[in-house]
Length: 296
Image (cartoon, rainbow, N blue to C red; front, side, top):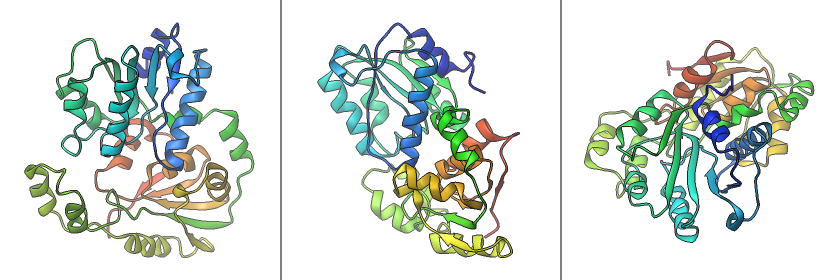
């Protein structure tokens, strides 16, 4: 899956003579998977890394859901202000216009933006329409967590897998489980009027409770049922629970990705911006055991 024809892999290979600093950001277990996948990829490409950004040539944020959270964009800006002589890149991410100031911030960046990458076709289209300078490498790649698919870590987790219960992992934030009204009230100061109008046309999203009830009904015959948002837990516990699941129901992207890498059957549920569907179509279709649940 991950060859030098992949634009993100090719970008890193083209910069293999540079020293890379991986820039942390706040997140959850899914973001840690992105981090670990990126470390694995850099190791496979024999790219030097450093813990000291002053010694780096390129500062790389591995990817994830960067543009939807202003706190993440603010980390970009603080990094640029502190290290103006470094190049900057963001790995495969979900790209959404209008929610944060990321487009204008990139246009005004005081550093060289070397590359920006998307993890699904819609996000890539948004990058292409943003009008960045021609020397910024843009590309469509895979979620960096998938670079763990053939790693020693995931191989060991697959070998330890069992089938003890049905697992339900659902969000309870503005990306997945709150009503449209709650989402709008919480972010109204950040959203342009066109997005507010879009939200007004949609009924409320199915809540965490609705999704959990649907999951229990679908898998009533598959054994004990456990609903827990392991995405908020440390990676060892995240994997311990996930590898023991017989079936996984989730609206969390990285629970879906980790589960399919472990060989699990997954029922995927919609979120506010369709991240799971988009990444599935680009990276998982044809090999992952995933069924999308839409009729509720």
